[in-house]
Length: 332
Image (cartoon, rainbow, N blue to C red; front, side):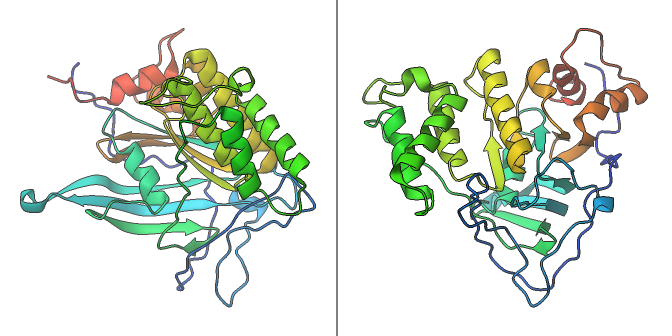
């Protein structure tokens, strides 16, 4: 493919203004868990652990209006974020270069780009999970407060447990004590149904030693366990890998619906979604070689490429078109 004149390396201003925030000079770890679906249980939300009042965004800051009052909300924003990996004697390599963006409650932000563009590294940087040989620079703001790290919980699925047992046990551990065992079980069964796992609920998860459910189904079990606690912020790395187009749409539509109902902020790295899945995204961050090609509403990306002389052909998947235009791996 011929060299593209598309200004890949210039971050594009978003048509909608990101939430404005006041940077706090204090640095603190944030621990939270939202139980927004159960009114009788406590709701914890990330806040600035300082003497000042927690940051609140106003309607003028572009806050979504589809989040119910009283629901835990997380406004995630990153500014001039760069990540460098140390390769010993080989020196260092820049993985992410000066990225800025934001994710809002009730919406799904998709991180897209060719393989090796930095999608997973961006997720790890936002979640505070960079490897020891990686060095990050820039600001990551949660509800307006600068954070050193943000740690997510990792789930290891036991091969000998059935799908129902894994989710039920996790529900007993994660859900608050104010719920009865029957309520916790009902909640777990509902999440299993939402992820389309009811038909394999009694099947072992399996693994290398014993045969069980498929790899795509195991991924959905992991998503089930994460959704049990109704978190206010979710990071998803390739949630549709190993799934067919129908299952991918089913899973992402459920995640988008949960984000809309519970006010959850979702940031997902997606490799190549179908047209139907792409239409579920609210925001889009296109990356190439660690730099931003486009950041803004997913619905406006076609206009951006059209304005730069790369219109999307009719009946072509927009995500396929975007990735084809920004992929430089096969340019001669």
